[in-house]
Length: 212
Image 1 (cartoon, rainbow, N blue to C red):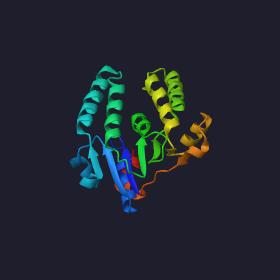
Image 2 (image 1 turned 60 degrees about the horizontal axis):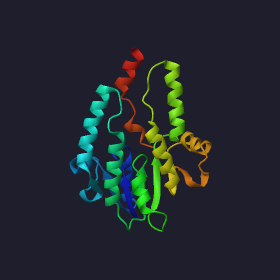
Image 3 (image 1 turned 90 degrees about the vertical axis):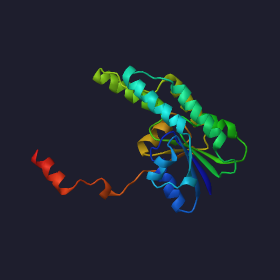
């Protein structure tokens, strides 16, 4: 299968691409990482399509946000990446996997005609429930917490409607989408896993923690 993965950054998309390629699929990752950076994660030069300028702008904006404690150019960054991806996804792909937030322009251009399967990857709960949970924690701690903006709340819900399938990473996230009225036939759970030894603490570190 020809599979394009659209992700503004990395998340677990690089691992996903490598796993799919190991199964014999023709996979490309459209990302804002430069090729020299994706190579560090094992992606070959033919597996990545970079939008490096977007990566640079995103880092500058994130730095500005940390200083202003606000949202700077959110809609510009998401839309510009999605419009770039729309021009670069393969028309003959069997599936296009988009991480939520940068899907709308890509999937709307693909339309409802027969073509690549439109799969949305949502790495959290339904965005409405995410907003509610964060709002409740904000009230409980009486401290401001960064929450999805009204613009992003509306955008992601339009994206859910356009996707053929929505891939979720846990039963908690899956159930949140059911509660928000999304048809269960559209949802799928892809639970993440990793080798336990990669996160296992060394014996010396365990002994030190116990001593403390």
